[in-house]
Length: 220
Image (cartoon, one colour):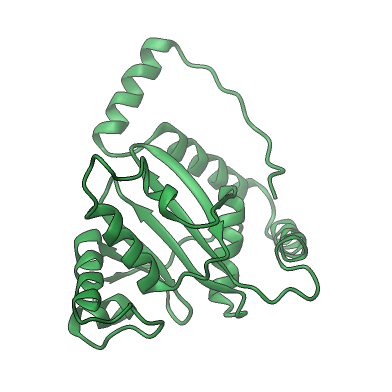
């Protein structure tokens, strides 16, 4: 559901280049900051009651499009920042936590000469979505509707892997920890089952360790 509109801004080319270079040093992008600022303006200036009405309207439209009557499939949603480029996508592959961890492990362990150009290219049946659509998948995951198998935020530029836990919201981990847990499952001769191993690292992936944080609701 891509019904967003663009907002045009102007800045002197020299100033823009300097700003982009400074943000790149911090593994950030101008687009991220502008998007956050725009969403913050929306939260500050649009009354709470109106935001609640719009949130429900958008939710209903999203459900009708993504889950038509009679559908019995699950989506997984990814938000990936790699090389300063943002990609939001969905897949009917029904990825859960360790499925995403295994895919990331395989991508990072692949020799550069045969590695896909970007991590998003490793996701089967990938369909690109808007950041707003990603937020809707996030909300449905925390509501535990059974229609979303997993929601993942993979910030490769910062070395962070985040996933939504249906009970406690977003949890973030270093990519190295996720990679190690996936290696553990693979070396044990298992195919990374739907229920993660109860090793210390695997338990950490399920919220036993790592830094938990609740993501601010972009739609509120």
